[in-house]
Image 1 (cartoon, rainbow, N blue to C red):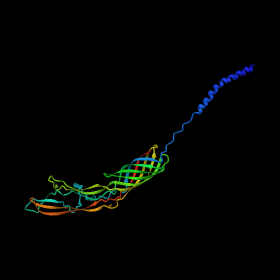
Image 2: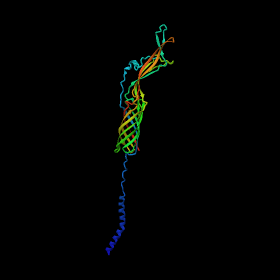
Image 3: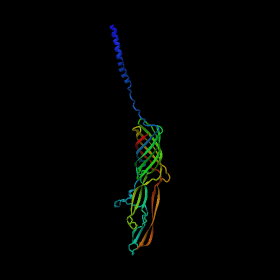
Image 4: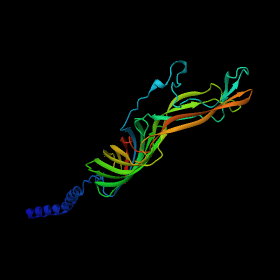
Length: 331
C-alpha cells in the first residue's frame, strides 16, 4: 500500500513539473535558431554597359617641331643706337622730303625741312621665326571636356572639345571619338582615337618697322625716323582637320567618380593650297621737292622697294603631343 502511494505521488509531481520544464527548454532553443547573419551589401559594378561618362581635364601640349630659326643679329647695331638697323630692306631708303634753300646765293646748299604728311610708316615681314606654326612656342597649357556613351562594357563613342593657349592667341577644336577599354576591378586601361577640326593658333615672324614723329603741322619731324626689328605672331584664321590617337588609364574612386590620365598624339592636316610663304614686292612711290624761299623749283621722283613674306595657309609643322589629367563622372 505504501509503495502504491509513493508511486502515485511521484507520478503526480512529474505531471505537475513537466509543463514548466518543457516551456523553458524548447523556447530557449527555438530562440537561438532564429538568429540569422545579415549578408554584406553587394559591391557595385564600376564599369557598366549603357554608361554615360563626362570627363573634365587639363592638358600640357608640346610641339612636334620645336625651336626657332636662326636670328641674324648682325642687322642690329650696338652702342648708343642699339636696336637700330644696319640695313633697311627698302632700297633706296629715301623717304619723300621737302627741302628749303637756306642761301639764295648758293641754290645748291639745301636743308631738309621735313617729310611730307602722307609718308606711311613701314612694316615689312622678313621671315618666319618659330618652327612650330600652331603654338608659336615649344609647349603650352590647355584643357577640355568630353562626353562618352558606352553601349557595352568595353566600347563607347563620344564628343571632345579642347582648347590650347597659343602665343597671344587661342587654338581650339572638337572631335568625334571612339574608345575601347578593358576594365578589371577599379582600373580600366583604354585606347582612343578621333577625327575633327582645329582653328586658331599663330606663327612667329620677324618684322622690320619704321616709325616717325609728326609735327603739329602734320609734317614728319626731321631726324625722327626710327628703324627696329620686332618678333610678332601672325594668327591662323583658317580651319584645319585634326586627327587623334592615344592611350590611357582610368581609376574609379567610387561607382560614379574616377580619375584619368592619358597621352594623345594629334595630327593637323588640310589646307594644302597656298601653304608656302611667298615673297611679295612692296613699292612705295614718292618725290623730293626743292624750294627756294618757299617756291618749288624742281622735283625728283623716288621709288622705294622691298621684299616681304606673305604667310601661307597650310598645316605643316602643327602636329603636337598632349598629356591629359582629369576627373570623370559616370552615370
